[in-house]
Length: 253
Image (cartoon, rainbow, N blue to C red; front, side):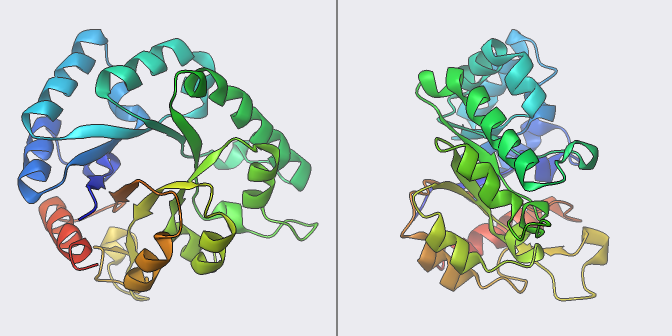
């Protein structure tokens, strides 16, 4: 079975983190993915304590999300955090609405910006890429997609594909798996509730309990370079239920 990871953003409303890591280890997860809100405020001792907590529960933080400001303004510190926690891959995950370019040239400029930001991390031997949401699949005035413009201008960028956000963006995940199979190095495994359901969970669902065609998509992903498969739910009402049911589903693939 693939080593399954868990995005710790899903657990942000369920402190303390030490208890979350214990629960994930017990359920059979072997990796977790960090996000800027966890390690951003930490000093060196706190980062080392997090590493100790991971080790104690049979986990490693194989991948991490870092904001564009963290990557550009504090590359040395972010690289130190990544090394201490044992990461092999870094992904920039988001742009606030006001910061998003409005046209194709703007998105190409952002792709080039990511490419430049990647240098110290790639020089250190880490994978570096972009993590999508839905806005990258909104058609621009010239008929192109922000997603394609980012990767056009960032030829060295890998892609952490968030399949459910691709679906929510109105795009065909099978098409983009095929087009970008050589770029996909990590995958977010999440699910979408049927229309009108799970509104208290922002319309998301535990993996295998929604509408995303996960068995077929999982099979298609075998043609990619994906090494990390990261369970995520943006707003679970029951964290243990979400983590347990999701990994149980993945074990059937």
